[in-house]
Length: 98
Image 1 (tube, helix red, strand yellow):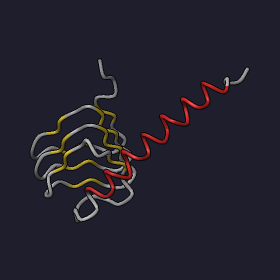
Image 2 (tube, rainbow, N blue to C red):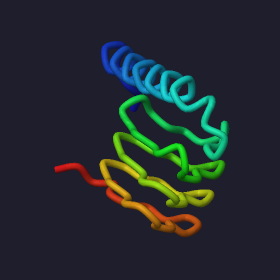
Image 3 (cartoon, rainbow, N blue to C red):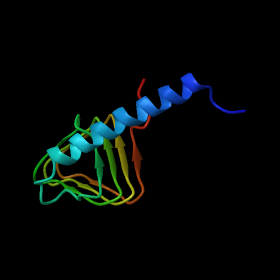
């Protein structure tokens, strides 16, 4: 069983919208020295210039405060991280949005 043509079009459209958000996020944080260029960050997220975001992380519609760390392999979705917080390797925070 496969997807119908309409379902495929919807999937492709959602994928394109998501990629556009991540491209805009990349451009938004391109001059932040402490944010990895290999992190996926959407344009709705806010990151303090003194926060560290390492490679292989995903940040979607979230905020990260001053001097906080988001280490590699972590995901932050619909969450707020305050100041002076450290999120460990491979952590998943706030994945469900209700």
